Amino acid sequence: MNGEFDLIKKYFSFPHSRDDVLIAAGDDCASVTVPENKQLLITTDTLISGVHFPIETAAEDIAYKAIMVNLSDLAAMGATPAWLTLAITLPEFNEGWLERFSQSFYEVLKRFNISLIGGDTTKGALSITIQAMGLCDKNKSLRRDKAKIGDKIYVTGSIGDAAIGLQAVINKYGDEKLQPCITRLNRPEARVEFAEALVTHSVCAIDISDGLVADLEHIVEASNCGAKIHLPRIPVSTSANYYFEKYNKAIIDWSLLLTQGDDYELCFTVNAENENKVHDFARQYKLKINCIGEIIKEKELSFINAKGRLEKFLMTGFKHF
Ligand code: ADP
Ligand code: MG
Image (cartoon, rainbow, N blue to C red; front, side, top):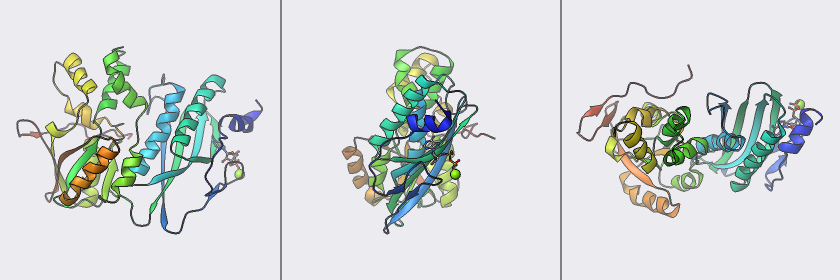
């Protein structure tokens, strides 16, 4: 291996088939074309070892998650992924690790027809920064500031699995029945295809990365409204329910489920007229969706428990500072 150029050539030069890439990796900049009727959406996310994933996480899972968290941001705005850049900092040259990282990275690129068009490679504590770029029809992007009073609030999939997966890893439970939650932690699934369909019948969405409470707060603040959420309607997976049965005296810890983040599900609002169509999409994409509440005029975010009482959360989501 002769420096980072060989490393880039060997592990980060993937074949790609997009004809909108004019200049890919290899020059000082990459260059792409954006069709006249489309809008470009750009997002970036960093994953730091020990902060965004446990240090023992497998290379293939790190690659998968690093891309998915960015695709989740694109999905939140209804964009179709197109291009990525990858800035990677590696503590050492470890061939096996790079091989596994690279292979898994390429699998996700192929699955979504994304081109890796550039990046940066440096030495230091392990961290991965991806910039993802995607396209949507002009003025059709979903936005967090578009919720309207009376809209129904929906979430995809189930909420809080990654939080439990993290508990399982930290506490080394070694319990097979918690594996689905660990998989959710290491291999989140960005709701890309569903989001592409959603733009026709919704205008407001966010992806749940910091926890449902924090991300709902973003929607109501940006949209200048409030939300009433019914806790019993929030989808909790079988594996998560098992966790509470076995490790928490059969008490559901809503704070854990709703404030730890790493869900990468979508939270979106729908005008009551469009609810049926959205359910049709969900069936078509084999994705579970649940109505968990509604947008209200009063500027407050309230969570109503099974007894009809207000539930208070001490923490509101993961914050770095
Ligand atoms: P420069 O010094 O001109 O900024 P670099 O030496 O950082 O360029 O990178 C050389 C080329 O390799 C650039 O085209 C860059 O986009 C690409 N590149 C560097 N690291 C990566 C990576 N991890 N994945 C993909 N492309 C990369
Ligand atoms: Mg240069």
